[in-house]
Image (cartoon, rainbow, N blue to C red):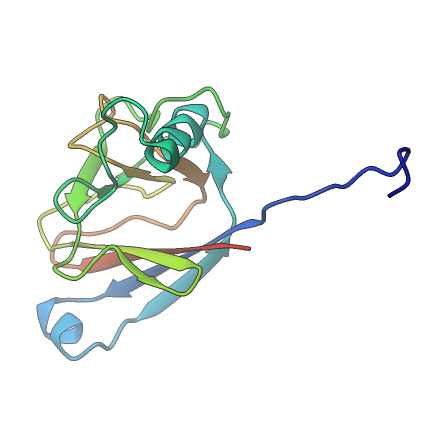
Length: 167
């Protein structure tokens, strides 16, 4: 091997967020959303990267992003994402919702998180999103997405999926 040759490897982190908006419980039960948004990308947060590496190496006792612990958070802040943030930036309008029964799930190199926000939950402007391994910003936030998705009204059910593929 040429001593001057440099081997470069990189990992690709490709998240796709899907937000489904249902007018009411009946539309949700029938899986008939009035709007579906798909957003590519987000920012990995430093604390999330640290937790992933600790979990990979079995260091300390980090909390896994499992069905029992993981939540998707939504908030109304439009503050730009920065790697040093430790969660949602909204001061009051933010909600963390636990995973649906079979989530997170993994297929090949993709893990998918899913939460359902019912008719009385998170009724405010949806501008920011995160995956966290606990009940609130005190836990470790994996990532943060800033994307204006409109205002969820009382009576509506909205779902959030994030499928993260590593390659």
